[in-house]
Amino acid sequence: MKDMAQTERQIFILLLLSDNKRGYTINDIHTSLEKWDVVVDKKTIRRDIDSLSSICFISEEVKNGKTYYIADKFRLSDITFSSPELISLAFMLELLKPYQYMTMGRTSNELIHKLLDNTSNLNIEFTKHFTGLVTINTNDYISDSLNPEVEEKLHHAIQNSKKSRIIYRSFGSDEDTIRIIHPYEFSINDGALCVVGFCELRNDIRDFRVSRIKAITLLDDTFQIPDDFHDRRKKNKFIHLSGSVVEQIIISFDKYTSRYIMEYEADLADEIIETEEGITFIRKTAVTDELIRWILQFGQGAKVLNPSHLKEKIIDELEKSLKQYKNS
Image (tube, rainbow, N blue to C red; front, side):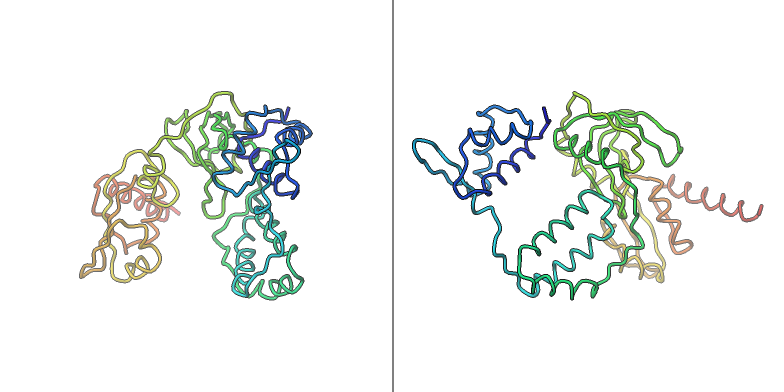
């Protein structure tokens, strides 16, 4: 029996109802699902249709004592695009290029081409003309090599709130560890696909780069995402990484460096105060290795004012670098 998630099943039903203007009965839908080796009772199918009716236009028609369900409005046909819309499609195709190694990226690309293939040849040629006129800088993106099976299982785990056992190659220690995780969502960090979730080994929410997951087994146990997950993650995260202890970070930037901060990094601050020397950058976040690396890249243009232990970490890193150069 094929294990199909509720969301997948409802999309299947919606596509089925939009495929035939005559419509389908509950028995027809049940038979179609069985052909795909998906066993589900007719009451569940009725509940699925009720759920879909709240978000999609599904009509009912009684013929010869049987109720037929139709979702003809869901089917796209005879689409006409305006010039700005076609330019936007070309733009989206360019945006998707760095993500072709992901199943989601390839599927998104195929979806846009499917839309174009169902329109006139003029639309297709028009889009080809504009493709390439806009180039997206992909230097910061990472082309990972993903295992499609791992990616598919993670999709299933997220959709069905399934705890998962993974073998993970840690970046810091470069060792394989076995972990039980609660996969909450996917995220993309500098082009690399990651899964965000609670790690039972570390007793904390972590980001796991999918390409570093060597094997995954979905467990029978389920989990529930905390109600405050997204709020806490936003507060605790600086750029990509998060921590459990949040503190007020205060950094002074000189005039030259503050120009860069104001143009490219201002959104990272909770508050920015202009001073005679430049700016004071204020942010409540966790002190992570990522934050330390971010500060160090500005050299003498940045000075940590608070907290004191972050200042000590910066001094320690600078002393290690100085020692390394002196000994070389």
